[in-house]
Amino acid sequence: MATKTYAEQISKAQVMLSGLKGNAEQVARRGLDQAFQDKLGADHDLAVSLNNEQEKLKADLVTKTAQLDAKLAELASEVSEAQKIVKMDFDQSRWKEFGIDAKR
Image (cartoon, rainbow, N blue to C red; front, top):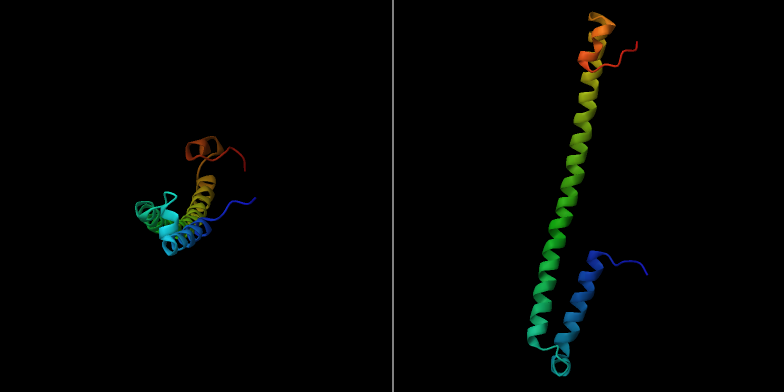
């Protein structure tokens, strides 16, 4: 059986809560009283809030990852340009101090 998504779990809890409220008298006899329903409702609301926050964080992560990728591409280009200059201006024996492996 596949694991349910957070949204599916939250939705299932909401449906359960609605059913319990609609049959409050009958389910209260089995221990699913108003206090239980209140806790279920509060936990549901908190889960919705946490899920929304997580979705925002995921979107922020995608944005930051794109920014990082762009900056790393720019950085790689700059390092490549610097390596070309170092290789032209310095003897191969000194390339190591610039982090360049000793090969042409």
